[in-house]
Image 1 (cartoon, chains in turn red, blue):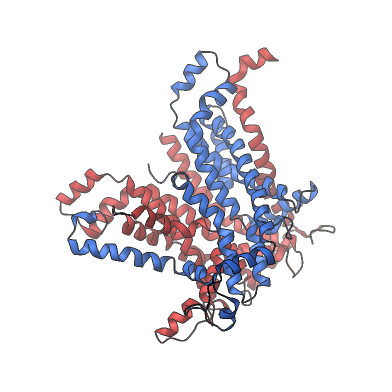
Image 2 (spheres, rainbow over the protein chains, first blue to last red; image 1 turned 45 degrees about the vertical axis):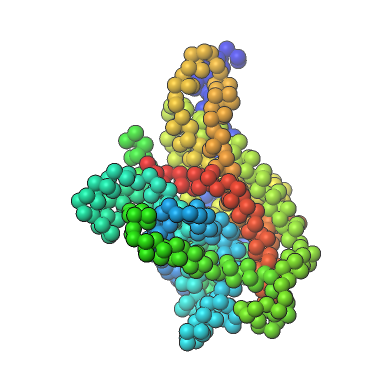
Length: 295
Length: 282
């Protein structure tokens, strides 16, 4: 035994080190994906017997207006969430100076990302409060009527997205600030001698060097947008009348809430969301694979 | 605009910049400032609708004491620690090992295993929700802080493996070669050669994982219920339901719940940002 280990250490050691982590990951992450796909083929209230229904859950989804509304909201989230990237770049450029106390400014601008989305949701619910919220006080002060953002079907999703953009912009900002730290100053000097200024400098000299930061910012923002759950749950519980639901929230609502436990149907929604996410994961892994090969 | 350092511009624009900074900051943090100000108002002010005028009295102490005495928030916070600390320790233990295995050894399937961990990070939580809840129920850990922590450990291992593996891969490989020639076993290499060099990575991941887990809400609602086990995020959400329109209490509670990760961030800012911006620089 001992001799065998001595002779084959190099082959055995990696698997020895990998086993605990892989085991945990397999139990809690990999297997549940397949289990969910399986559950999506059943009608199940989570307690009693499962009844096999084939693709019925998916067929039902096709005719479910709430599903389409959630999907539509997911797309709105995805598109508008991308604003965090230019916004983060803008704030980073603004803060990328060396004046006294700038470090404290940078940390305070980053602040929203550190606090929980539950707190962000409460903060913005209070901000939007139709009678006493700060936003409406300010709107009234400049002569507009109050808007009950979170009770209005047309505004509610946008209102929640703004709340989400707040921490997300902070995240993108910190990515860009780090990127800006390592921008090649010689290139900037050279470009300056060539009379590059302002937008042209930003577009042709700075942005290309920030490409790794932009890549990460896109990745985390897409994931953030598709994971949106906390804010919706805290601020509106999907309302009014389901108009602010996204797939993640709709799934949760179907699987267990006061409307009854429909695990199978919920799992079917999750599978759809998973497939959408897989497109991104596939793209990301492909890029990573190319980078690894290139090394 | 950016590339021009401010000290090279005219005196006027320097002044303008120094004035713009605090104004921009106040706008940026306006929603938060509103909450902080509300948290020190009296119930009388709240009922009278005096939200933004000068407060009739400063009730900071009363409100924050009320939050602790009239609600189980102390308990919620304790639960948060009971979930967060084991998660940080467990995740780091697992990912130091997986990162070491994937960063040091060349073997068949290395890339595959690595990509599995990376891909796992991006999965929508909902696809895991029903089976993980079932599994936790079946091992009798539903509605326990440990049951919640176990899931977090497994899931966070994905991200931490990515981080650790890249960190270890960047270490000088000669060190390990030398140790091997000297006849040091692989386990000793892990413990005595590589681990001491991983301190910065461990520090960065501890703060990150601490913050992520402290702020988790989704899994807290899926795997726990009630004040005995729920962490502070879920607790705050249910308190919000009870404290309808008592905005001074909701505000104070929010600030209390946000405190630990905020303190953690300011104490270990450098590590936190190093962890978060992994890969943002080539």
